[in-house]
Amino acid sequence: MPGKILVVDDEPAIRAMVRFALKQADFRCAEAQDAAEAQTCVLADLPDLILLDWMLPGLNGVDYARRLRRERLTQNIPIIMLTARVDEEDKVRALNTGADDFMTKPFSPRELIARVRAVLRRVAPMASDDIVAIGGLLLDPATHKVLADDERLTLGPTEFRLLHFFMTHAERVHSRERVLDAVWGSNTYIDERTVDVHIRRLRKALTASGYDRYIQTVRGVGYRFSGDS
Image (cartoon, rainbow, N blue to C red; front, side, top):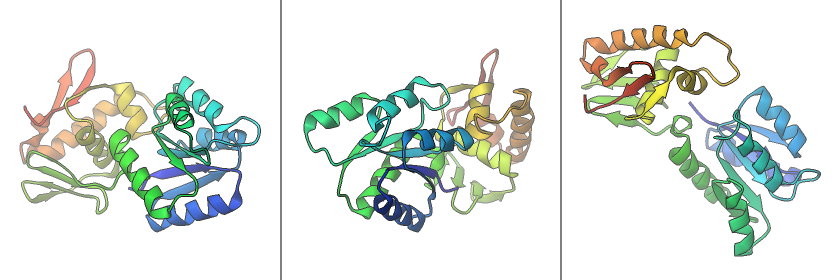
């Protein structure tokens, strides 16, 4: 379940280097040379993270980051700002726009991948291939495997994504709308009750092991996944 990274930079050589490094690390990659092209990419298919150059033609990266943070659709997409600026004041300015990290050019591909993975683990855990374990449940995104007390479970693709979301966002109450956005995507227009149908299927798959109890209905609000149940 590799994350999709949008690279926004007006230098073709930089985009080529970053694209190669991301693909070597099994990330999917999209590219844009300015903010307008980036916005088209974002609206077509939301990325899991944006690598955003500061000095873009037209709307610069700092102002575009502010725009992304103002809009509901994009306000939670993590951003790593790329820039040749080295002053501490510039770094603070970039972070104050809502950027999650800051990298100074030139940078090594290894450092870039490490920073991307660190940000995704922190703010978008579903985009990471890290194994998740709660109680006796273990989910491995890389192999699409779920174990309950070392017994393998069979889940459909949607139920797998649903469980992954719950396990990486445990102990919090989520509305149906939030679950829809995270599991089906913000651009998908389906009834919120679809969430209930797939949660019933997920509970059924977990029933034999007893871990269906981890999925709790919060009346009038939504659902919580808790290993303390």
